[in-house]
Amino acid sequence: MFVSKRFTGFAGFWALLVVVVVSYAGVFTGMDQPLLTWSTAAFAGLGVAYLGIAIVFGLPGSKCAESMVGRLIYFAIQMPLVTLILFSSPVKGGVALLVLPLVSQAVFMLPTALVGLFSALLYAVTLAQIAAVYGWRSAAYNSMGFLAAFVFTIAFSYVARREAVERAKAQALSAQLEEANQKLREAAAQAEELAVARERNRLAREIHDGLGHYLTTIAVQLEAAQALLGGSPSPATEAIGKAAQLSQEALADVRRSVGALRVDAPRLALVHQLEQLARADPQLMVAMAVQGTARDLAPAVEHAIYRVAQEGLTNVRKHAGTGRAQLALDFRDRVIVRLSVEDEGRGERAREPVIGFGLNGVRERVEQFGGRMQAAPRPQGGFGLSVEIPG
Image (cartoon, rainbow, N blue to C red):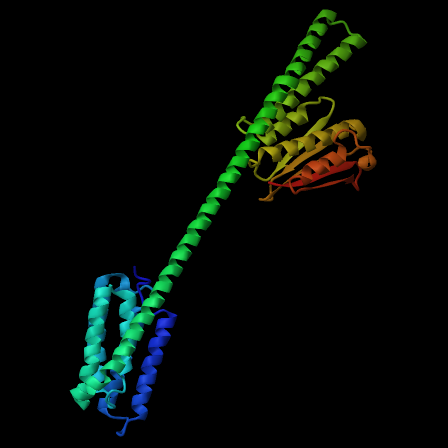
């Protein structure tokens, strides 16, 4: 397994740069000939090419290191280049360290067999350069020192490569673990949503089969009582008629609540629900306005808005002393929906006792969704109830 397609990361680049700079600095400071000559310029150019090719090879996006062929081409270029540097050095033996970064690169980028082959070739080139200047006796004398340097470089590079491999494995395992944890969290959330949906459906069935059944029976019995009494006006007839109307309204309200509870139930658009609510009481003229483009909201949010409108209109009938009201639904904000119920009545309901939900119940209902409520007499007369709910 190879750690990376490139050797010249930050650490590799700085190591190579330091070796080249130190080696060349040692040569130029130890020279006994002028610096500005064609031979020294060629020697410096070979060093720049050696360093530049390594840098370009390791650049992000470089295609050279993407395949084994590209890596072999890289070493096929760098090995003759470092050989020329060794043999053209003005100070013989002064740049022998330049072969060690190439040995380390081979460890990181080549199979073990090729690492041994390239290392042996570089070792032979190093000894040949010493022999060419000082003879084979001197090369043999220095061979053990250079062998130790080669062995240390190879061993250290293998240790570094193994550590990098283990770190890469740990990072991959950590990523897999995080992915598994995320899937577990998603599965837990789905299970919770499913449990909530099942419970809501169960409650909806209970309400529909229990309360809905009794309200339907009451409505049928009241209609039968009306039929028995005939059409003659009397207090009893009026009371029964009113009771029949209220039972029908209660039954419709139960069905609406059941629809809000069931996650799979078809729903009437909120605007249409409010329009029906505005027309429900012939004794109260409700002018309804929709501002902005209506959009679908979460069922629970739509149900809360409907309940607020219902409570607001009920309060108008009970306390305003007027037969007119204004109901406005505002979708102009992309993340907030606003509802307001206003009248031109007495405007004295801010201190009303809490009956049923009342204003406190409306506030609690709205705050469950992170919204807010305002209820106060209007400066121009009457009373205003407005809510804002994210949705």
